[in-house]
Length: 231
Image (cartoon, rainbow, N blue to C red; front, side, top):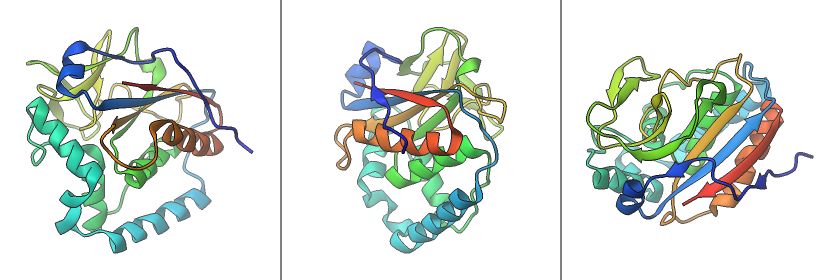
């Protein structure tokens, strides 16, 4: 039996004052993993994921996505920061739209696939990063003119007026799209997972989400986990 991670009180990611004032309901669920073995996702998990995707296609329709509370709340959060959510979709919504259109989700690796599974389960933006690619203090803030990075989708994206995570080298993640710089590969063993939550969203409390996600993640990828809820 895999135990739930201890919820640590120390800050793993700092929220700057500007972001706090613009999104006072923001909560970051941060999980650090050590000693993971990232590989191809195991067959039982892939089967479970496929069944879950079929369930999503039955339960939801493209026309009613905007009525789902987590999607609705994150669209509003993007608007508050000055970004159009119809042009820059929160990542969980983008994943769900892809599923409902009948597109396949590519298998990436056991870390990214689990990350995508839980993003769709909770309909929250999830980010997973190679901690060894990050330097120094990590801060959640609002992007300024000139902020951007080469993204996982292969495009150079502007992060102006978007919630972003930055380290000493610059921006690397967001609830929109993540950077290629901190991408998790099968060589990664120290990982940082950030779940972008809003305290106005009904459902499981953030600490319970952290426990559920970390328990499943370490069952598949091994290693240990510790978490913090930052608001």
